Amino acid sequence: MAYNKFEESDKEFMDGSKCAFNVQEEVNNIKRESEDKIQKVGVYMDLIKFTFLEAQFSVS
Image (tube, rainbow, N blue to C red; front, side, top):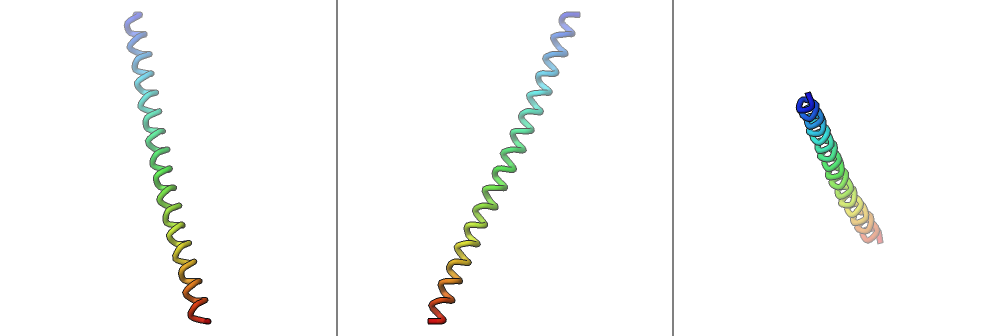
């Protein structure tokens, strides 16, 4: 009976570890996606600045 109890708690621990690993993996994915989006926004901002400066010089 005690051995079965150990197996149950071991299984619960393993299930919990898998769950924690999956949550961490999801967090990493979200972080990576966010970093990609932030990088794209930076590129767009640079493009807007360049276009604005180019427009200023062509008007002058």
